[in-house]
Image 1 (cartoon, rainbow, N blue to C red):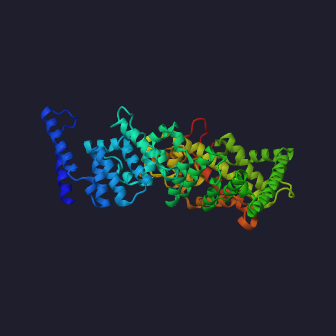
Image 2: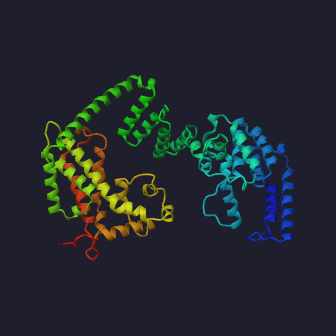
Image 3: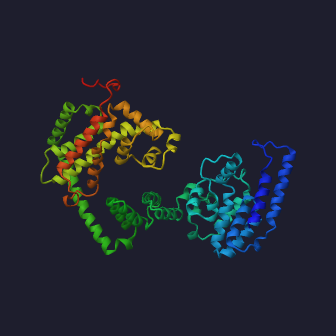
Length: 499
């Protein structure tokens, strides 16, 4: 096999020799290359596929036939590989289908271009695709094949479709995403990619990689497209519990119970639903009491008084948007206002104060820093970022979380990335001392918020009015620093500092 490889390498090099970068060859060059190619094919065919005795060499010969576009030889080697490797009929059809599809894909075109140009700017792996690596199959299946008129052969595209249509649905895995299959079945590429039979194996792959957030993202898209599908919510329950999101997990249990009668009749599920019903009734009663109180003259008067206090004592208040101003008043009202003791416990008031405070804080950071950042950055700058929550926000996949925003402000350095440099520019125009925002005490803000995320019982969270007040004070101190502009460059329309 080693000597065979040596000859193949020599003939391949001879075939490539003599070609100019712009492909402007003279007749002699073309004749030389044609002779080398003919010799290469003749040498390859000297070894009959039926004479190969090991699976490893058979696959090696299979890939050489693919490179040289020897399709009849490739089919024979596929059959030989099935015999030596003891493949099932489905496995053989998948092997031949994805290989013929690859020859007409944009990915293979890029491989060839990188070899011709000598420049490779990305990972252009192709052998694992032929070997059936599921993550690579999933990734490359999202790339369209070349248009038929530009492909190596329209017949090969149709042949790939024919092989893949022979495969049992349960064996398809990520091969569902291959676009010719989508067209052959009369579905659009977007439809075929969203099929549960395609998405479930992808979710399994993410689970094996321990990427729970990606499992949730995949299954939630399935749940939205197929709202009556049974089972998907049960898997999501486990995923959300792994992330500590018991509130969403509980909602998914209720969603599954609405779709699956057998699941709903389970004794433990019935107990859960009964307890949820009691909690929902209590929440409904509390909401009614809150609406009744907030519409009263007493509550309105207190909120007006708090607004006046903020206008007189806290200069950054006027720099907040009207929406954030209204939101900021609410946590102070929960902590310092007068509420009917029978309607709201201190724990409930503290929990709602922290929740309202964080919402106002998040909204302001997003409005003043991160939405302007998203508008300012270029696609090239975004592409240069690693796969982080910031990148996910900038491309519009997720919203800006509090933890992400604080983390980016703390670690923003011009040397990190162009995106980080732009964030520093936004901070320097708005804030006279952005370094002060990096104080470790502000790390406590997300931690103060998290216990309130799902449960307000003191025995579970220990939330108190004092903790809520601490949260408000920290957020207010952060905003005071952020909203103190440089003395030499006041914001348009704003008074100079000290006036």
